[in-house]
Length: 292
Image 1: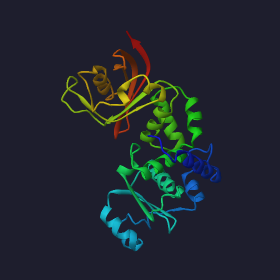
Image 2: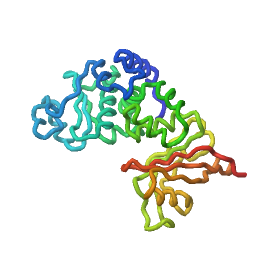
Image 3: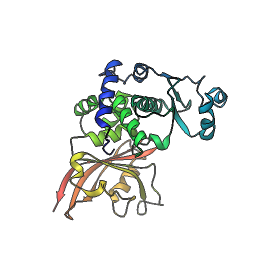
Image 4: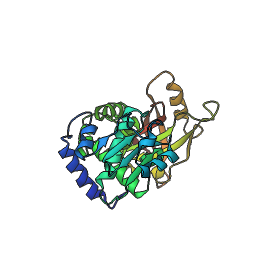
């Protein structure tokens, strides 16, 4: 996530709300208490305007927009009604993040928009539109309790098992936790979020679509991969990745080694772990070793 001019203001507002909600060091993060402390209410499935049978009951100025985007939205903030509307069919971890995201919109007083509608594109952690980036940044701070996340992360060993454990602890999705885990790590860590399965007919022709490339601060100084991430990781270039993909048929986590270039043209050998959450593949690369 790129730097925000409003970052310090959001950090201050998030810290204040976490304290008011009594949320610090409570696990999983008490999202409902955070929303209530912001003097918002979360709609139930009975009064959600996302449900087809009740959409007509939404405020008139919101109703037409909801009909336009019906079936595509995950959440909406109605500031005057002090309500957060959530799609009734989303997963619990999605509900928690969307609730924090909508609360993040309300937390930023300069976002003077009466109704805020959010779908998958807006909730992508890599989004760059200012208001959405601000809401995502606030949501991450609320859900992962700001510095508490780093403190918790430091108490676990480096690896994908920790991603899963920390996600469960905070009540967050694997996707959001993996993103935070890589970008907040003090270690030399690289992460790739890949499509759920590769294209190609066999291990010699697999191509893994790269959705996002992430890196810890120290790793960004080591390799250009995260500045200009490849669109694909091909088994012709990374044969160990193809082997690891095959291993996932019988194992929750697959391991291997891959080489990445450095700025001076040399390479580093990294150990990696590969796992899936059924929606994406996640590759965590670590422990770089210089190859002369």
